[in-house]
Image 1 (cartoon, rainbow, N blue to C red):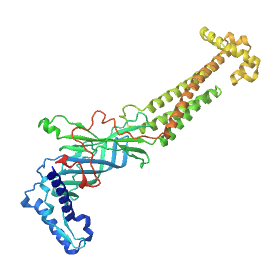
Image 2 (image 1 turned 180 degrees about the vertical axis):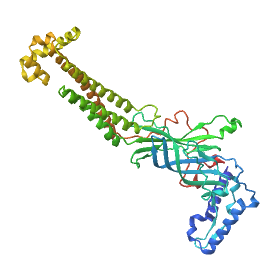
Image 3 (image 1 turned 180 degrees about the horizontal axis):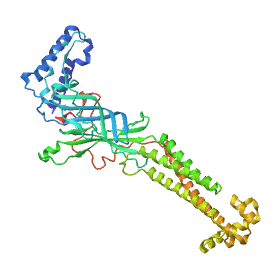
Image 4 (image 1 turned 90 degrees about the vertical axis):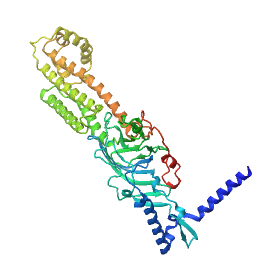
Length: 477
């Protein structure tokens, strides 16, 4: 037992001494003298020739049979067109894989640094992507087709002594996104950037709360946990199909509603209030009809304006469209009632009133007529004043010419009551929506897209700050 313990401590001590004797030159690269730099350059060339030269037998097209670590992080939302359904992102990607053909023994050569008195080896090399094998990863939902490594042949990857390859770069993606404008202008959109890979990909699952981005004047957005989607069975068999996966990185996009709320909801509320004003205008055909028709045209203009902001294929239809159509129909109803009121006021005394209408009118007018006789200050409209001056109580109840004007007045009051009730409901809705303008948005890590498609297979958290200390390297061998 003691011998095993002694052997263990000896092994630890030897590793510590060896580590102090041979370090990667990157740690002290600015302290080398000219001759030492020349030696490092020559050794780098020797390593490149050994792993990539004609003698090495390295072929770019040969698959090294490896898994691929993949990390995708949104940097900025460049634009989101909810009408066209297109999302533009600037993102960073961190990709690493293992290629055993690119390994070398760093301790076979070393450079002694006179300043520190230490020997340094070459543990990392920068190699152009065009010289090595790269995994095929491309966008699955692109507006414009894109392969991650296409047109990046002259960018460099970092190759580790054990054959691990690391690539860190920026991507500009343009992808399709099905907009959801049901709650416009309080709409939220579940978009995603989808990659299809021909190698088994290990995705990076976020281990912290999603970051909320508010650098866009029109949208608030954040990235959610990734997932993968299974493809249809491959013609090469089930095993081959496992190597072809769609990696989904969901993006939640939320509209800033303040601007559209002020420019759409507030004018609509004002027009709704003006709808009630129609019944306070004297029942003169020219005045009341012209005012109600002007309001009807205003609602038509707003309906066209809002329709231009929403795609024709929007599914479901935004609730604001239903509201605008309702307001349009309500304004049309008010216009029709104004026309009916004008007709009632034009009827002459020779036309008798139907008995049913007379009974209804008597039932509702008895109390009102008593009030008119008791106090002149309770009269609300010009029609009631004319009725007081020209008629007795009996003439009203008998249903002669003046009674048609009474019917017109009663009809106006019924319509006004209905419109006021609708207006009260609209004001309550307006106050509720206005309170939502200042509501804080809490990021949700789980997306609707990935609820039924969690990440399958092998997954791990990747360390990306210092690639030499990654704990998941064994997973990609």
